Image 1 (cartoon, helix red, strand yellow):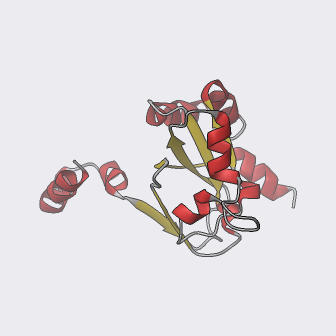
Image 2 (image 1 turned 45 degrees about the vertical axis):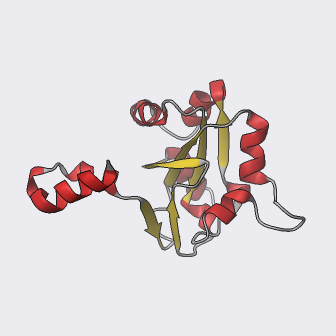
Length: 155
């Protein structure tokens, strides 16, 4: 479907809304220093909260990277700075980062997934990155977070 839409967009450019260009993008890149309040949002389906946490936070070998980092080879993600929520905890976790409008928009994009992983720009430690879907997570997009702005103001 994406391939068809991209072809249609390339052929008819001005007839397709600008927002569709973002939907057609399969990855996002940045330099790790711009947009300090931006949070990248991933959705995924996991059998349990423990499985989700293992994917995001548990090294696959002693002193090795987490599976999330292995699946994002063009982004060194400091997993100490990411956040994740499963099932009925998703909405309350999103409430910690985003306003009502943003939460509604995000929740509409998450269905039918039952987990959310939030990666703030600061998790890239100022380094260039390229993120995309992984075998377990779908890149939903990004939103600016008031919580990240507040954290930056206290430094």
